[in-house]
Image (cartoon, rainbow, N blue to C red; front, side, top):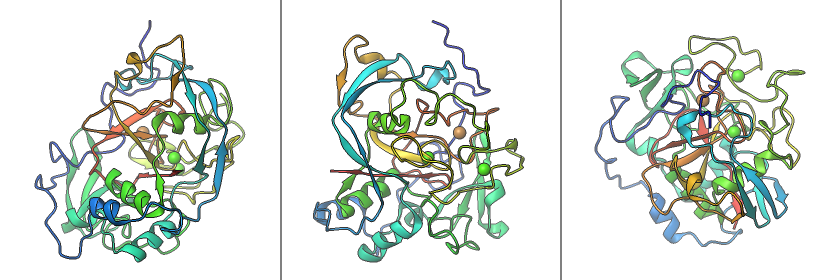
Length: 343
Ligand SMILES: [Ca+2]
Ligand SMILES: [Ca+2]
Ligand SMILES: [Cu+2]
């Protein structure tokens, strides 16, 4: 089988920089300092009652019917190293999923109720796209290895998405970003929710269409106007913002898919519950559906889905239904957030 990719993405093109392992942003390798006011994700998970009335989760729901679908790349646009093949049938039970990613207003309700400190706040830094930095020079810690358009920025976190000089003013209905996998799990524990499995995410993103590249079908991103928020221009130097947005867009921008979900592809990457393994699909049968797959039993990195405002045809081409990416559970950056599923 031809495993060539149609994109300019090499074996390891980076959509989201990693906090752990190599400190590519010049970040400290040590665990975050213990803080008397910090409330850990584990503590929230242990203490929060898992009922829907525990948290104040207000996001509109889409009811996704039970069904079987073909998971994986059908268009040939896959990134060879990401493990989008083989295509395989998956059977899912019905579930209820947020029509948008969790917004800053949503996340603020959680933080106000619990005092939770995100990992970006406890580490004291996060990753910001170079054109989005809003911080003094001395806050710039370094550039990500292999992705020098990512800066480690002291003081960047969900409340300061560009760094210390930025704020959430005007961003209440934008996706919460600089949210790590662990932070997303803590929100879910409070709200009585969970992250979607990778299979649920892809099925929901497909919007009831069979084996199409995008949530709206196979038409290209700009056919009849932009369909979601990605990067236009000369990546990573110049963003023409032809779709209207340099960084995040309000979560209800652009047309929803057939299930009513907004911007599954584009805008921000979305954490899924599964551990990521590029070889996982190869372990599943191709001639009979796998029921409600939950990914590998263990791993070091978690699945991210959907691509973001930084994705560009010349680079990663990961703004597709079947595209896969991953990062460590403690990594955070300005182009990743999450949406949730009912328990
Ligand atoms: Ca854009
Ligand atoms: Ca998205
Ligand atoms: Cu990308």
